[in-house]
Amino acid sequence: MTSDQTLPMRLNHITLHLRPRSFFQTNTAVAAQLYRQAQQWISEIQPTSVLDLFCGVGGFALHAATVAGPVRGVELSEDAVASARLSAEQLPGRESLGAIQFEAGDATSALDDGRPADLVIVNPPRRGIGELAAALDRSSATHVLYSSCNATSLAADLARMPSLRVTRARLFDMFPQTRHHEVLLLLER
Image 1 (cartoon, rainbow, N blue to C red):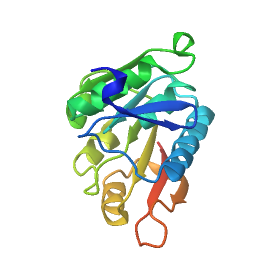
Image 2 (image 1 turned 90 degrees about the vertical axis):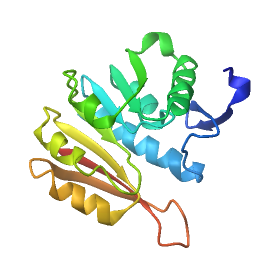
Image 3 (image 1 turned 135 degrees about the horizontal axis):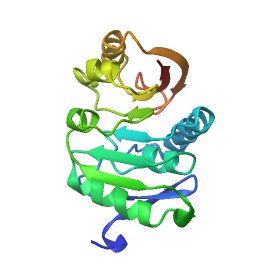
Image 4 (image 1 turned 90 degrees about the horizontal axis):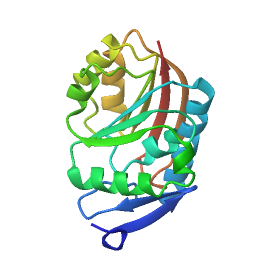
């Protein structure tokens, strides 16, 4: 596919390419704030490696790649992975950044594949990360960046990760005048 077969969406300094079966936040102004906040926190903790699970079209991973590296994104949707790869190819200053890799696959398998990461990013569907939370708790990751649109599943996931504590949190009004929101948490071991 070429970039003409995607819908390019510019958020901050990064153009993300969307395909018909790719999830994307529809409130782009708030999504840009979410990605900037994540990028700032990542810059402050300076991880030596990043694993973005449920990476979608690469929003978090590509913002992370500008301040940390190497970065690996994993997503079940091959269309989303193709979009993320195209966006990575066009990332401003790409030649001066570390390795950026996107692959189609299962989040739990990626976490347990023997390639540890200092920082794991999760932006799961509304159902949360479920049993992956216990695997994250057992992992060697020193930080987890968790973006959630469902407080109930987030609370259940946090309970499954007792060795990680929330050090920062920010609420984003993704859908103004509704009860829906997005929250970004930074957890530390």
